[in-house]
Length: 248
Image (cartoon, rainbow, N blue to C red; front, side, top):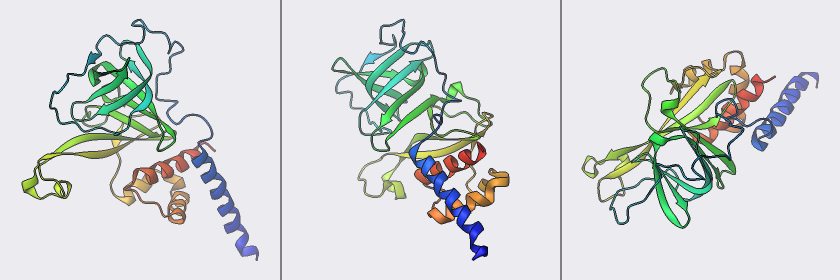
């Protein structure tokens, strides 16, 4: 019976840590990254950033939204002006925000947005997006926004772009579509201790190297919970778990 005791204790620790990860206890994951202003509710434009424009009617544009639903959120411009508590959508093809203001759909280019965030009722969490041109990347800087997925010793983020497909190519993305169109391409990124942002490794061996002395514990956590590296939800659990361990 004594040989089972260490395994039992380790299992109990994993169980307690997982409960903390799921419940979202502690500081917000994006606390070290988002520029929190004490004057967040004070704006020089009375709640409307000057570059906001009405959405042209019947423009016939092809659109691809990050989320199909409207989510209540806040927008911060590079000039420290804010739009607070408005229904938002992010349109990926044109890299712009659409928002409902006074019963009208308005648009704002990503060039004027430093960050935005909304409450995702599906995931029951606050989603935070930072403009890539405000961040430091090791390689090419993408256009658009990074979504912060897990924050701590290693910050996990994702970037989504619209990729065009042609039906004639018979690509997996084009199956089931009769016309040419767009699909969402996802690239995950990471940064260590707030350093340069780099693409997340695709190979398991390279990914485990990020966890250093805690890689064996992380491997067990992944195995016991049946997690995979290709799914956003599982990646968030893995990095939340590692960041929680790193706080100890």
